Image (cartoon, rainbow, N blue to C red; front, side, top):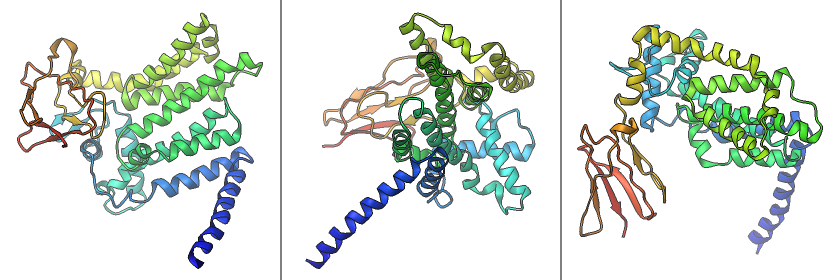
Length: 353
């Protein structure tokens, strides 16, 4: 009885405390930013230096950045002796900047400390949460915007990406920042508000440029599809002129083109060929109940179909494609199925009974 009554007495206090923190955060934009920053640090920092490299791509990114620092070549991207052009140079520059700063400050073993390579992802995840708050302010109240940011922060996938030295967290930051400005540009004339000024437009075009340098055209697909949808629905594209593309596009090209020109001058069109046909690890999803389970990205003309054979016990072995069969596309509809790679490199799909 005493234990139950004690828990019941603490519950209102805890609930009231959480409400007080939420009310404090929603009182002003500066308070909201501080509270969200502290919550992100509490949620994302644990384990960032203790967890070893778990994701295969994380080890590739970190090793390629380390080689870039050791050789002093910040144009060509290499993993050991192989070229690595499947992603542009943006994330490597960000990781190299952090490691170089840590080395300059006297941090021992900076080049072999994986948590330093993860800091751009941590900053990107925190930036994505803050950018979500800023983006949501264009649609809802401050309390709703704080709640939206907290919902993103609490997502498990963002917590994972914040602790991996990869591109996704940083890319998310750029996408959300660009969408926040795009939303304000679109809504301003419909609400009678003043159009975003030079600072916000600079954020938009800079976010596009950084996103391109991080993961190629992915950010253009997200932002461009949203803008194209609004243009089709409104049957007018005049509102896009408020983005000031006359000076915005040249600024984007100034930021993006130098590396592409440099890598073209170094290896010609080989970097583009390697980006599509070079070595690429097999990628396996874990618990996707419907959709693409295993894909190897290659040019469409070289793609082939599914290679699989059924076993009578409900277990299918999917053979590794040959040189001419370069695409493996599987649609899984049963959540009890899972994919694993055996020691021989072949992919096995198991059905849990």
